[in-house]
Image 1 (cartoon, one colour):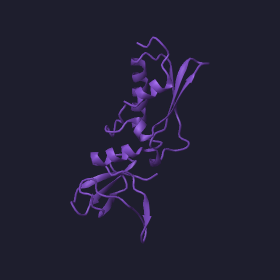
Image 2 (cartoon, rainbow, N blue to C red):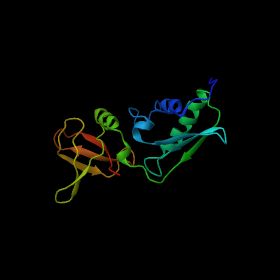
Image 3 (tube, one colour):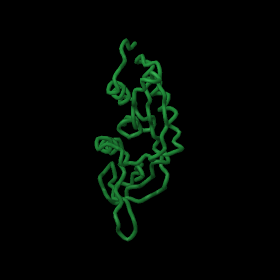
Image 4 (cartoon, rainbow, N blue to C red):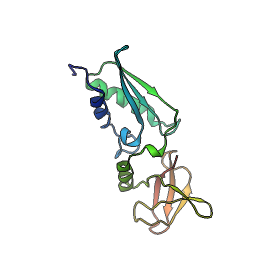
Length: 163
């Protein structure tokens, strides 16, 4: 139980421990879902702002509940959660460390788009490293990801869509 008011930095450190429910190797901070934390002296509460990876993300309610429960377990009595849709989440908010862990986990990090004959992603298979990949479906295991197949090792893999 918290006997003194925690700092915003302490609250952020606690929330950095919350794993994304769909990609457990990343935290909500790694993904950029956690936008802001403020202490409101007027209302005596912490205001936590989050942004889903897309507006219909089913995991956002689980994330919100986990934030509330994590802070409650640490003795924080009053928390107001705000979901911010503007500006919309972008893969640019992923940390470099998050991109590396995605790759290690078997999900291709978002690829920068390059111009060839048409716009194509510049990505490599997270399993064998080959750049010979093809899109199988615009939607992978979640709408924020697409399903690709490596033409070298023939393994399918999810890839974060570039937003």
